[in-house]
Amino acid sequence: MQKRRLGAHGPMVGAVALGTMNFVGTYGEADPDESLRCMAECLEIGIDHIDTSNVYGMGRAEELLARFLKDHRGRITLASKCGITRDPQRPFDNSADHMRQALEASLRRMGVDHIDLYYLHRHEVARPIEEVMQTLMRFRDEGKIGAIGLSEIAPSTLERALAVGPVAAVQSEYSLWSRQPELGILQACAREGAALVAFSPVGRGVFGAEAPDPAGFGDRDLRAGMPRFSPENWPHNLRHLHRFAEFARDHRESPASVAIAWVLARGDHVIALPGSRSIAHMRENARGAAIRLSPEQQDEIGRLLPPGWAHGARYGEAMSRGPQAYC
Image (cartoon, rainbow, N blue to C red; front, side, top):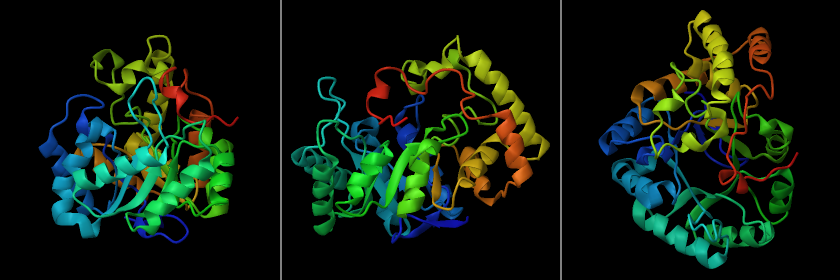
């Protein structure tokens, strides 16, 4: 596994990380033992950066992770997040009191005394980012977190945050079908020495060996409410995905591996963050870090999947309230 730096002064970690959101049923029922086996296998193949959040399963992902960290903490760069409440009346809370309560609860659930990288999961619009950074810097100075991250923010928010203190990483959805980071945050992170941690680089499974069937999504599957999977949009998207899958197989690679390789080729500061509880899928994802796409291959991918090719918005109305739009 190739290594990349997690922020200007951060540790070297695997270019492919592991997200834990679907360890707790976000895309359907999950088996905890299968998730634990997946984490152990990931560590053996060089995936040593694990990302979670206090709201994944309302803390259950962190509780499951504690079982793994008990024996492997020293080999893991651990990231978690705060700032989302799951309260419909106040979905985001960046107050110092709320963030401290969230941090202390995460530390208890995971059985650790510090978190290597701690993100603001979503920015509460009414609260200045400068105030939020001061809270995060207090956590850092207390030794409870190692580095500060921000998630789904605009370049302007990063600029203001950096005027207060260092930001090691920015997490944004980035894949061949979600390209907004190319309009500013990808470049801003490169300028400022921050890692861009690209979540859902396999497009929530659409670049898997077999594209998902939205008709089979259960009630708990997050994708069921996403416009790109709607009956109106999915058939159009599927045609593009089939062409990309043929390209990957013509090069004797899986679509997921090529999708990861494409994301990593966007810059040396980019880290891919897929989420899976399948060992086979994570091996495909890790394979992406070993693929070097030629300029000609990248051009061909660009013709198959040009910016803006996906039909439908990436989020529905409710989920679109948190990420910051900047173009």
